[in-house]
Amino acid sequence: MPWRPDLLALVELAAPSSCAGCGTAGTRWCPDCANVLGTAAPRPWRPTPCPAGFPPTWTGPAYAGPVRAAVVAWKERDRVELTPVLAAVLRGVLAEALAASAPHTVAVLRGAPVALVPAPSAPSSVRTRGRRPVPELAAAAARTDLVVDALRLTRRVQDQAGLSARQRAANLERAVTVRPRVRAALRGVPCVVVDDVVTTGATLVECARALRAVGAGPVVAVTVAATARRPVEPRPRRSD
Image 1 (cartoon, rainbow, N blue to C red):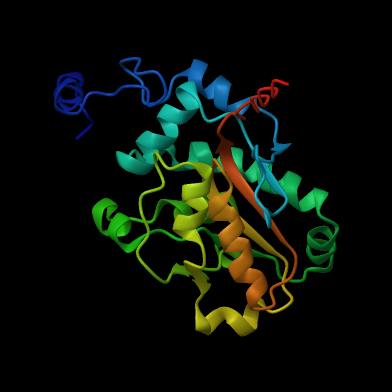
Image 2 (cartoon, rainbow, N blue to C red):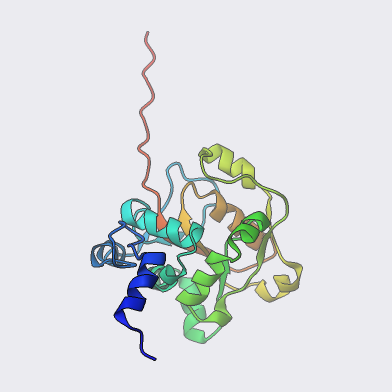
């Protein structure tokens, strides 16, 4: 039986639609927010200050306004209908990253393997969400067979939200390792670390370190969005 308008109205009343970016009623993702997310060109990005070991990284728009709201809704509020929306952005970023890295480009042209490696999630986060958003995003952005679930956390880490750059680095230091079953397969293979957002770069640094430690090939990274750079405040002059 076809859906009747009154039944659709009841569904809308029970679970009202609203734009994940701006909250506009009656739509799950409005044209204005789609324009903000979709028109940002992929760009190389480095945090300020840039930590040692930070891999070459490409990203999409700034993590602010409707972009931030959409990513939070997708990741924390189970708005899984946004996966293809964010994956479209990541797909463009990934293409740019591969084209900008000679070893990755050569591997693609030769049909050699390139591994997309999602950043790991804390087990507690997986239990809370009931899903692993970043691997889902990576799989939606590229062929599933390219995604290698290689990284895991070896100890409990704090939630990164609210931590300074130095605290984030200390929180994740030596906390990521490559699963033993895939170490041999990654040896010499160009890798792309995938995450949703890059802030201080601590997560990407630690993921890249873990991959290099097992002999993986060159490592680059891609994210959907990046936090705005913080201006470096000039040091006060010393008075004579």
